[in-house]
Length: 222
Image 1 (cartoon, rainbow, N blue to C red):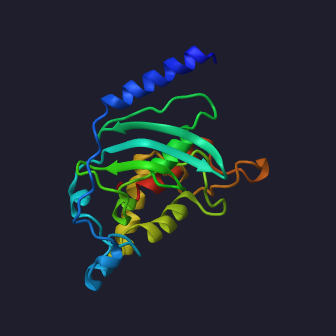
Image 2: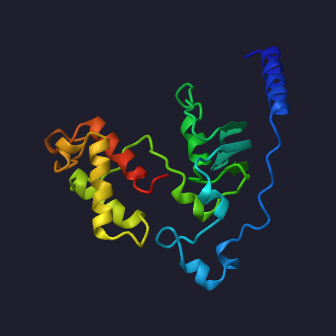
Image 3: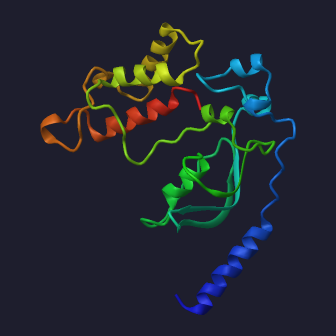
């Protein structure tokens, strides 16, 4: 890349950042778990998680905006500073060559690992909190499943860990059955997931495995 191309790229980035609106400051009324009364900290929407901002919970969708977001891993810059935003209720494709930082960007936006810069969620510009864990779902590139369990057993196990504590066994099982039906997994619901890397222990197909991972993230209605 020539010096002139680098200069044009930097000028385009500067012009793009100048057009971006300033991110709103997070509300001063947001309380962390340590500041909450004891009775409020106990009433969590998920096991072990305290109830966070009320405004985030009431919003029908969740927009995301970020400014100068970057990721550095072991001294290596894995994601150069970037800015952007995604409106609630929209579908956005992140495209780029292999190794360009697509997964790193999604990891940062879903707060999986260290990152630098500003990220705001929702119309009020909330910072990351425990209440957002149930609103943000991320299906990883690599499918991580328990090979010795069936699809239904895997989802029931995940439901017991991730769904709200006040959900009884019947509610969890109904949620699992609904997701199995919606994602077209009824035919293989009782099939062992298996190990995709070994032919002799192969279970469900790659597409069914991916849909299982998607169903796992949908258990909490993100």
